[in-house]
Length: 298
Image (tube, rainbow, N blue to C red; front, side, top):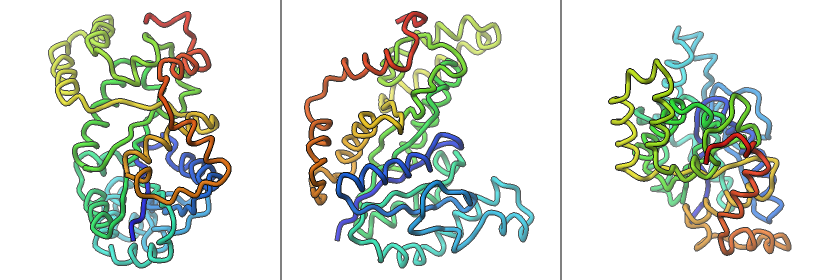
């Protein structure tokens, strides 16, 4: 039996657990049976009731105390332990065969850029006929700093290449996008990752970053050569953006083609959101709602 779901990943503080809570509530309202799996052994304060919790198998606190490891090394050990005890996870998931699964993953970036445990666990789930899409959240306020935005692009690209799943990149907390500074460009410049030479021009205004012009050019060249990274803006309190994410993920993991379409009366709302894309007007609306357009350059 095919089981559909999302592997929710991203740096600490990007809003993964909040996203899982909001996504479960909306999908439940649309008529889907949803289960949330907490795969973060260091997260002991969850905003949702987890149906499967890796802390029942291993916790970061115990690992750090017993093996004298720091938080990063301890988290790597926990994920390697979960990989070694993969049968425990499968046994727990057997009780949710008729559910749409949300996997809430740890926030350590290294787990998705060059460590193999999460990738191996995901691939084993795929062998059990799980149809999964990676939902990668990054904090949208990084858009206000050109150098940080390039770092976000590189992290997203590295994650896409390593995890090897259908991928949906998300700029989370778009309602706070200018919390730490004004944007240099319009919102769609960051979501569509348009011509990055303009970002390079912004970096030249920084006397420190100007010294690394050739390095920045090389990094931008790598991102543009792959041409894989784009973002969807998200505010979990905005139903329209949440429905837009559902549409993208359903297309990525194949739910739109092979899932149970029993969303009830609210399915009309989802169908409307999944209909013809008037992206220009959507971005114009979000730009007006969340960005001070008088201070952007494009």
